[in-house]
Length: 322
Image (cartoon, rainbow, N blue to C red; front, side):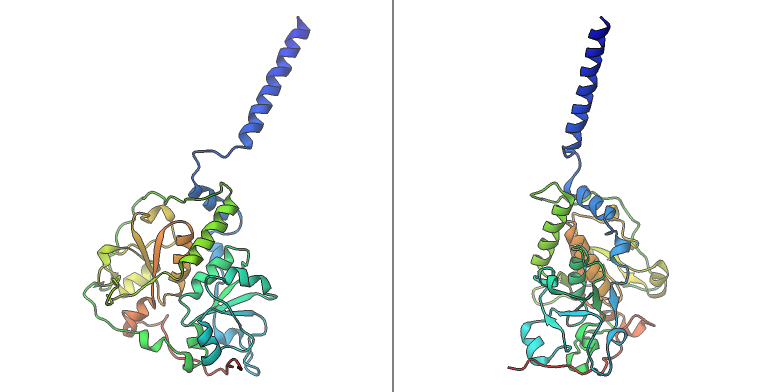
């Protein structure tokens, strides 16, 4: 009898071990792809705080003013090939594109700096790189506009609009709400695999920017704030100083459950460069997100006491020899 009881006990223990082992090998069907990828990112040094740590630098901080090169970095220029070749580029910079930035980065032998026209689209590229293992990739602040005035596209995009949809200081932001997370379609249940797919999808979608004012065929965020979920990515004291776009929320730090996945999320900051990073991050996670191009420099430029475009440097550059 004792032998029989021991046998039954052994069988029971083995059954428990077998079932537990099977559970470990099976993905919980109640865990969404969104939760899987965000948990993976949080566990692997890709929280919002970590992704934004040291992500931007100025030309004056990295240039060698004797050679006008950037010797400590691998400079990737994502402007058009024509502008890179004929208008000019930083000596030593290699041409790439937003769509191919991660693939091309495999050739980098130094930390990467991405440069574009104004610093807008470079934020998307840097976010893609940081989510792909290049955790020290940086954006060149102001883009090539900051390198030399021949490249300046910033000066023509600063404005004092005095728009009716700008809520004057001390501002009035909407109270934060709780929303559902977006749904992500994925061919894999693995966090790393989902992230790989989503970064590729974000890059394939191109730069997601929006203007403040309506265009001939486009809707502006400032002209039509009620059409969007607008997020002011400032500190509270900055809203008190300058005001905000009407209907805007202020979700900073970025809390994902406070963002409406059913709406187009427009993030704005001072210059459009930080909001480009935020927008890329949100699109990777399945949100429909856009960055307000040129930020409030394009809305209340004259009012700004800082965080504003000033002037280009006068650094040398080279053109591609035919």
